[in-house]
Length: 115
Length: 112
Image (cartoon, rainbow over the protein chains, first blue to last red):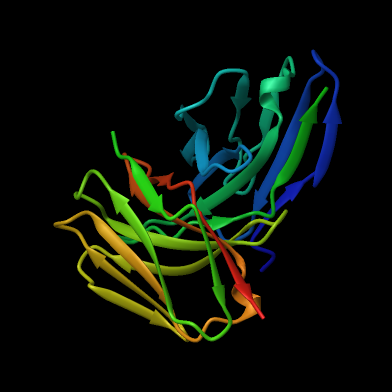
């Protein structure tokens, strides 16, 4: 199993450009998440999905969009890049099987700079 | 709203020392608590997950404890090594999708 994979690893955007961050998992997990991590900080939730066709906003969704057409893929779209979106983006997945079980597995991250 | 705090923000110790990293959370109604390791410029590696019904979880030189009633967890690292240098993050799930709320991390440096 490759686990959670993310592309690209690095990207530099100009203000106003758009891009899609790709995330794929091969563990058949139904829950997927996008987090961002600013320097010296913990991670904050952008969007999440509990299954194909179902997405919802997290703590910091402004400026982003997501879709979930398959169990495996959960792309994150930036429509009009702004310097405030300079961050490291992590995708994660999990498969809650009971009330107490929810280990999340993370991808390696995408480092995005907006100039 | 769940808040997670980690103290200290940074810690430097000589090799061989035993050390404790602290994590506190405001809402004790948690499913579990997860500890992660993050190396500079890298992703997150899951170290330990403690279920809400457990008090401790061990993996090699790592031991994590959980006290839900006081809203605290500790990560104990025995006989620290330079290779343990990294940032350690704790996180608790909440909400219908068990999304994680993270602390800001403790940056650990183990000096040879």
